[in-house]
Length: 156
Picture 1 (spheres, rainbow, N blue to C red):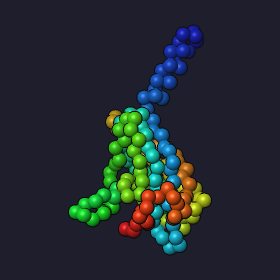
Picture 2 (picture 1 turned 30 degrees about the vertical axis):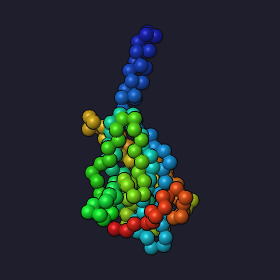
Picture 3 (picture 1 turned 30 degrees about the horizontal axis):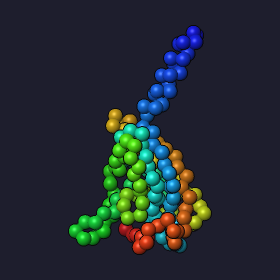
Picture 4 (picture 1 turned 45 degrees about the horizontal axis):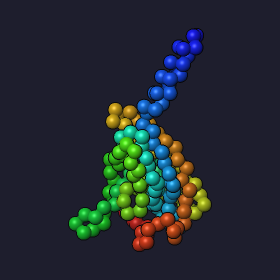
């Protein structure tokens, strides 16, 4: 193969990689639970290179994993499952207590500080193509200083 052809093929593969919905995850963590607690939240900062949506998540740590939002509705804080979280190109979106987050439900055992919870995040680009991203989220203590004041565990 001629060197110029090899260079063009390599450039095409590189460009194809750039064209994919590249999402970076920062500061992923899961809130520790107390014995008998059956649900907890996962939190992180997401940044997409192009317009993308977080459409689902899974984890071997919980049989039910959903993308949720907490929002003030009629002067009551309500939590609900959402079909997706929009990730505008180049703008960080924070999944945090009291806002968008990932719920891990029907936990078979306690999630303790120091554990790591594997998560698979599924993103969908404007073209409808889906990509998965594996994340290892450390578990932080219930009284972790990373939680805003007044943000205790919530129940369904």
